[in-house]
Length: 227
Image 1: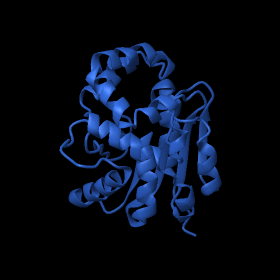
Image 2: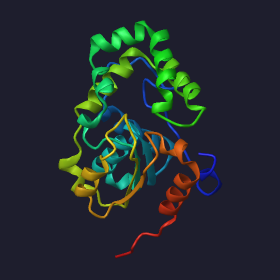
Image 3: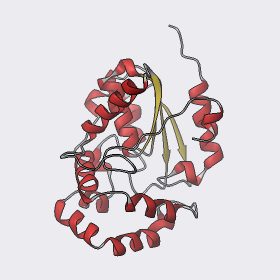
């Protein structure tokens, strides 16, 4: 955000149920977040903009380009599942009520386990504290329902509807989302630009920050073909 903010006006929104957004909803589905992005842009008077999303945020960004094409100039997905079944097994299991309930009623153990597992998720030493902060601001319902919805999502049938430039950025060592999710993205949108990092994991923006920022800015800077 700080880097791109030197060149672009940038906005970040928390999905409902996460961060500082409201947590008193009945549903926290991918479709809810797609509608949220549309409403967010409408309220702020943003007619059209590039969308950049990490993990579920990228899945939502692509979905916005499918359902609200007039809103989107470009899409960047970062470690995002195109097919929800590509989520790691522990994450898919967390989308079941009984398991999510146990996790959130043993939050101290869950957060402790995440700290231990952090080096296998991201190489940045700041990551454990960042993840712990995020978990502390998430509810069992938002966690459960969003993951369950993401697990059922499959964007492949609709990818041909995306007519704007797309870039997919993936780490070959991602163990949260299958690292080869760039393949269905490329198959569905043949013109999509794919950038991969051999040693990066799920949080490529933390594992290889400068190269990530350079690739992202270059893509955003590219002028669209008027044809």
